[in-house]
Image (cartoon, rainbow, N blue to C red; front, side, top):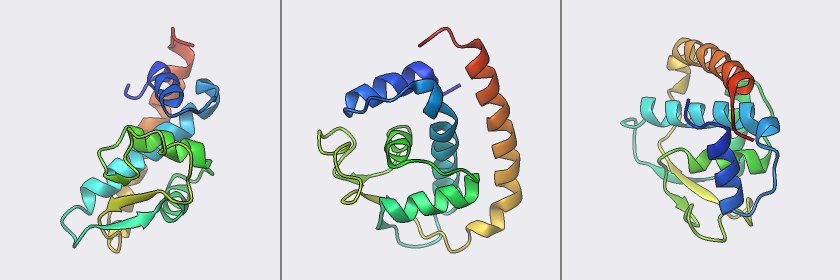
Length: 138
């Protein structure tokens, strides 16, 4: 499963976060899956604009029914193909959540895909449980 615990550990270190990968794993994976899902489903729905990371965090928490931290959102963005300001590889990426913006399509019609998301979420939660039980890393 991508990302796995080792991916999360390495990405956290790369952006200067000290987190226990097992404790943040479920939130990071669900957040990254939802961001990828929303981006894919709404890609052609209009002009993509930069939105605040806090606004994206609110949408993610509503759809995943979890409360991801700022650090978990930062980590999940590392596993999704989105443009960010500052860029994901810069040292400033992990430092200031308030100044982070993400280029994203308009999510006006995301509710049309609620049943699709529920299926993906259920499958992802099962994969998360398996990964946490069987992981050789960390």
